[in-house]
Image (cartoon, rainbow, N blue to C red; front, side):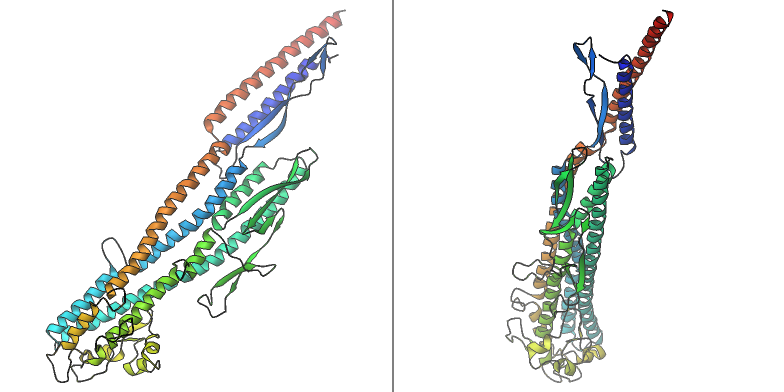
Length: 514
């Protein structure tokens, strides 16, 4: 037999259920622009039928709110994290290669190296027509200084970019540790909330947002595992994050990565290495910004290695050494002597044996004292330190234009040096201009490729994120429709409460009148 007040009870439950739905709708609308917020919805169920009418029919007992659900697709989240790691790596490389390209002084209108080498060649040509002219000699000296300064400046910028990448490694590791620690803390809070029957939707949103950011830094594999049952019968879920198969976060526990200074004498000496703090095991990421910074910092281009900043520094060094040795000694990259070089000529002051290029402004004697053979001597020259020799810097009359002493108008040695600069055998693969252009073309092609890949990967990630938003994001149109729906349901329940109140009043009056 149903209770006398069943109607009022059912109507009241309708009021409560509609009221809760209106509150959730209001909360969704309020958070329409909140980063990481996931749309919530009310899970409303019919109350177990208990009212029996006339001993025969079962009448429902109304409705109640069973839960406030967070609308989310874990599968799409995993897909986003996987692709976001690739985007982080590609975008970081694209950005940094653009800076490398700029370091070479390349713009759409100006090629800094082409300008420098052409000015040097023109100065040689000018001097060859007036070998005793002071102004022509000064012009060649200045053009040589500018060519060296181009190499010095480019090398310094590349070295700084490598240092920047090394700093980014440390900063990124610290960010990874911070995110892991925050995610572990949220894991703990979420489990405590769930065990107590409280909603953890907002905490789960915060955790997802942190994983989004973490995935851009390093490749992550996120899993959720049921480890038991909660008091309300739902699964007790534990979230774990692994990186390269190693656990980074497991429920409330987070492991730390640490940076240490490499001191093994390799080309990474003085740079940061990465290892797990608790085991000391070396750590190497598969993707993400961290991998990009390591590749850019360490990539030598040897074998299958990535062509990072060291590759371009090495190419510049090879250029400086080969140019200096060829111009000074007439010896090309293949080790063969094709010309007598600047050292084989005679200056206006009668000097001979003078080297035009040196390093750190050293004299010819000091340059030659730097090694036991030609290879050893010129191994001291790099793009960072190449300069004119102390003699040429101090006195332009030491520039060896002539092929013989006393030949003030003899420019035969200069003609050889002009031919030398245009000789495709100098670098085995071409002239100085062709060799340097191949380096610049390599970085330009690499930069353009990364820009294209970044655009494609960004489009893919945005597409996945849009699909996530279509499920989890708040639609003001949809919420406005819900607002109308739940408001009408609330009003109808209110009318029912009023109707039942009148019915009960009539019933009570009838009983009282008896």
